[in-house]
Image 1 (cartoon, rainbow, N blue to C red):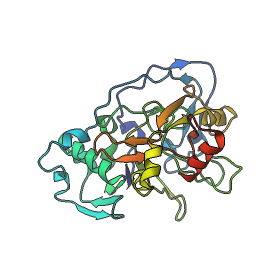
Image 2: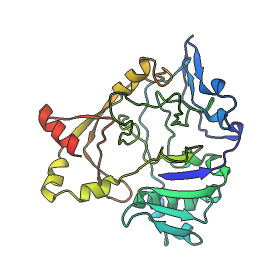
Image 3: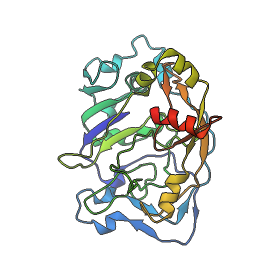
Length: 303
């Protein structure tokens, strides 16, 4: 993952293809937050909800992680030779300066993919807006279109997190003390995203932070016998609650693709690093396969 703070280009300069999958149309209206906030500096990036577009179920695809190629390089961290690197914690996270992402060669992008897999989250500051143009995301894999969230008009591959003093367009419940929920993006998909790039348009002077946790380190801190047991378990991940939240008129009221439930191993192995990690989260993990409800809840609440 990477988190960036930058000045954004005009929306019409974005080039995110490959094209979105074929969509069908109906006769419903659209909701466009930018129509209501035309004076906002980033109005063209506010969440747009097109009720006329729906997508078919996702199809399986073969993914080849670019980081695998970097393992063959004599120096897989060659792309960092002119950069300044600061570890955020001893085992997780790094902040890098001295690199412009849009200038990386394909070989250097492979090395970046490996480095992100090893460090978990990597922060790049002071980036040129060019970093997100010209096939940036599609180099690392198939781009994902979220089934319910808003996106800049015409660019469904962008998933927006937006909230202001008067409204929110996020998946948030109102029956909890906080709207903060630990999650990994869309784990209900059969093939969830392996890499997420997060950048900042705008934020308040305080609050609104995004926190990260290493599921690799969490797994490693468990006792060996418990780790061994967890590796035998599978968990149901569901997108149904998120879709129903939107169907009730929240978040823009759009469900572009019907929700799915998928069974994933509770412990997964990274295809590049070989590291084992927990694969559960509060937002989408619903139950442990084969366990009674009390047993399942005890394990999921612990993890």
